[in-house]
Image (tube, rainbow, N blue to C red; front, side, top):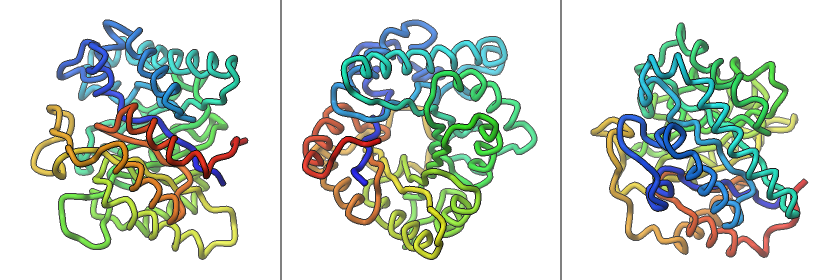
Length: 307
């Protein structure tokens, strides 16, 4: 199967274009104050060659926009994020391109925070995002999930929507453990077994160093090879952080990005992931339009029109 190309990280392209951006709202601030910038980022990723654009709903959680604002405006803002992405995708279809919209469902209680997961409250929050995004998205993307329970919560929240479920785990790149594991300490084998068992359409790895993706892909590939039923497809989209994020909470400031992870170098990583069995590749934090454009150019010979 020809690889599908995801878009890249949203926040830094908002900053590059001059969108309002600060803590605690993070990328949600553009939805609150200047949604046209969200549209522009989507358009730029489509022009770069992305097959899939992701809704700007990652920061629509109480951690970023506050509990009161989430209660009052969470559904409205999620619907706006979905509508902006859908309009760009539909306009691309009018111009002959097929672009899918992935509905981003984040870790509700914080990125890289498996210990903060609250099984009693998670559905209360996820249901608001799912209901608001559902009219606009083609697939669900539960992303940057640190533990299997977060993924299971996303599955439960989306199970009645009749849309494919993509689950993306973040790998622990703060230790020298080989092979790597989820940030919860759960193994990649456990995550892959879960994805196969529940019928996820795709299992991805994201928001970890590019060097950690290949081991994850290989382990997932080997787990899925043992099943005769159609397994999830595999994907990866790494971040460009200069060092592993472990000593500070995620999203409390812009991490310094690697100067060596040029678009050309990132494309080489992605080509390796594809050679190992990945069929969805893209970028996370710090991987921008230039990276996606170069990735598309280097993969041109591998690609055909996807269904």
